[in-house]
Each structure stands twice: as C-alpha cells, then as structure tokens.
Image 1 (cartoon, rainbow, N blue to C red):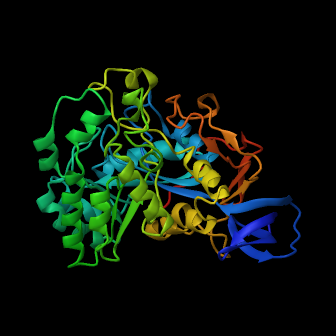
Image 2 (cartoon, rainbow, N blue to C red):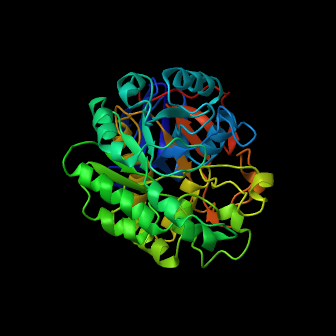
Length: 427
C-alpha cells in the first residue's frame, strides 16, 4: 500500500470508522485497522466519495477571459469535485476530431482534476459520430439555440441517438424545442421576459420527443438541467435508458425570490416559478432525479452587468455545488445517501468510469469534510476566473482535503499539485 486514510467513511450506504488502503491510485483495502508508511488520520471527520460534475463549460479554447481549464478545474477541486466533463460550445466548437484533440491537449496541460470531453452532434457531422467517439467521452445535442451552440434539427434526433448508441457513448441533450423558442421570442428586459421567451412548453415538447424515441430503442440519453414542472411530469413515463439532471440554480432560485441584478441570473433554460423549483426539489428528495450537475457557465462581471437583453446567459457553480448540498444534508433537507448518489455514484455509472464510491478496485477519489466547519460563501474566496457567484452568502461546507487517485490535491484548503495533474477519462 502506498498510503492509508482513516476516518468516518461512507461505505455501502452507511458511515463507519475505518481505514482506506490505497495502492497505485486505487482503493486496495478497507478495514478497521490498516498500516502504511504514509497514514492520514482524520479522526471523526467524514470521508466521502469525491463529486463528479457531468456538465461544465470551462470556455477553453476560445473564451479564456471567462474561464480556462486551469481556473475551472481548480474551482472544481476546491469544491470537492474530482472529475468534470466539459461541454463542446467553445471556439472552435468541439465538432471535429481535430477540435477534440486540440481541446484534450489543452486540458492535459492545464487541468488539476480528471476530465472528460463531449463532442457536439450537428446536422453536418452525424455521419462522423463513430469517428468522434474514439476520442470523446460522450456527445452533446443542443435542440434549442443557446450560448455559442450549434443545433441539431429535432427531426434528426432519432438518427443521432441511434448512431451514438452504436458507439457505446452517452448522449446529453439540451431539451428546448427551437420552433417553440422562435415562436415565443420577445425583446427581454428582465427575468420575467426571459421566462416568457423560453416557456416550459419548449422543454416539454423536446422531452416528449426524446421519450417517444426512447420507448422504441435502448439508446442511453440524459436530459440536462430539467427546469419545469411540465418537463418533470413528462419524464414520469421515461424509459429506463433516459436519465435526468438538475442544477443548483434551478433548485435554489425562482423568479419570485430574485429582486435585483436580473442579468446575473439569466440562464438557459431560464429560472422559473417557485412551483417549478419546489417540484424539482421533491424530485431530488424522492429519487426521481438522477444527478446534480452544475452547468458551470461563467461570464465576466463586466459582461453580466450589461443591459439584460445584451447580457450573456450562464451561471457559475462548479465550486459551490457539493458544499451547498452538504449544508443541506447537515440540515436534513436531503439525506447523505441521496446526495452521494446524485453527485458521485450515479454520474460515475452514467459515464462508465471507476469513480464515485469508496470501494475496493475503484479510483481513490475522496474528500474530507468537517460538518462543524459550515461557512457562508464569499466570492473573494472562490477560484473561478469570472469572480462572482449568485450563491454569495449561502451556507456551505467545503472539504478540507481532496484526494484524486490517492494523491492529495487539496490539503487544509491549499492546492498541492501542479497544472496537468488531471487525466482524461471516458475514452
């Protein structure tokens, strides 16, 4: 064994005081007592699986003034996330083999955490899916227009999902119907206008189409950032091959509880009503939702301070997601078992990676948490290049230590490794 970690670990659904043995980056043993030359004893602090974020926009390449793989992955690490999966709406968009390889090279040099990359499926590259699958971790389909995205026509969705399934890679879908969006487009002055221009019917229409396709195939697909009650109800009849995610901003914000700085909460799909938010929370607590995903989409303060109709859409969240929900679990608003399923177990299963559990044979990706160390989120303490957070002042519990593949990434809230430590996953 290279090292051992001792504490109150979450194993097989319960907390138990034990030691975790690590060899060559993998968990090699779990016992009450283990000894190695390098031993970390965290006493009664919690040892949890590190989080996995299926949905980040690190803006690299093309928009490094907003974020890059260095700052984005550092933010993820400080938030207890050991592995991220980056979206393809960069510049150039990740729609060709060359673009994937270019982004992979950038991330290998910069990333502190392990990472995967999605390729976008468009009307022009459907026939290239098999070739793209050799280099990416999965696929992303945008059915509705959003930030720097290339859409796939909804009538070609079945063909795209079928080809992606043949490559044995998951496909994530931004489910907003483009025709519905065009029909409802208006000049926007605030969040209510933004909501009217992207009504829940647009999400509902796309989700219905996805479900209809899924009923006749075993194609694995994932509906990103569910935001509406109507979409939720539609998904009650979803096939087992269809998973669904929800973001922190759709769980913590609604148009009734935002009274200023509307442009900072502008995102796609939009922040909706209190009833929508409460419906999503019930889905999280009752096991209806598969994963929590940050949809970390940073823009600079200057960009977000523009007039509402000119401000870009997107909200940062990769660093605060796990800490926010740890605070919720501490208050019994969410069980630890459900939280770990949503942020660790299920994302690892969907992506087919050996992470997400404290289990012999899996990557030794763990975080150390002291539930007594609750704090309020402060923008100046966060690490994203964008420099702001809508969660300023929210209660959170940040991990003191983060291990990836058994190596200390964070110790006492200080980074311990250099850029390029992260490995590519999901190939």
